[in-house]
Length: 264
Image 1: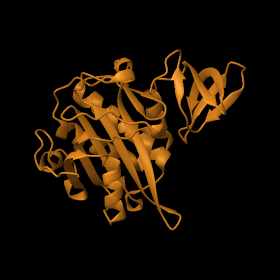
Image 2: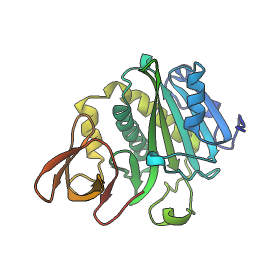
Image 3: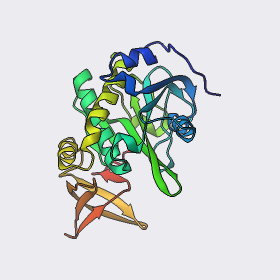
């Protein structure tokens, strides 16, 4: 059962609103514990929640990532946030909004924490060589039409201990910056970037933050592993790869490994 908590240490709707440029445009829910902020936001959307509804949790018991993975979400040490976006707010396209969210998180980290984040295509944020943030976009439809998108953001703020295979790949910002400030900054940045969805301007900034461009990568398609070099990202956000065979292909989705590392 989800519990609503109006004052979880450094997280509260009031504190977050105080850092927003236009707080009147946002409905903000802060939860102590929830299975998944994306699932909670989906339920709100199906019950008529408006554009720019934000759900934030102190702890997730079943945080979700891409490709059916879980997102480790311990209490007190992370920011677990979902933002409901509807058509009246502008472009509603999962790939474009994922790109905007990744850039928004990177801008926020750079501004508040004096770090240099990078984006591993498509939607993972790395800081100091470790995966520090994951982004999951999920779409909802009504009568076959796209009616909303939920952008889920899981950001490790001060998590020090990770379980199992995460130990070697996951990291944190290692910052004491208030989580409400970080949440407000990400919301502001995404709000600023949303009108740029689908533009070369946004793609150029996304590319400037890329961890993979110019690097050797590998990926698997139809059971076969391919090797090549990531050479560009097009305006749709697809990764352009020159294979070792010199064939050029376009990846629209999937999982890539950088060099000999298989980041999860």
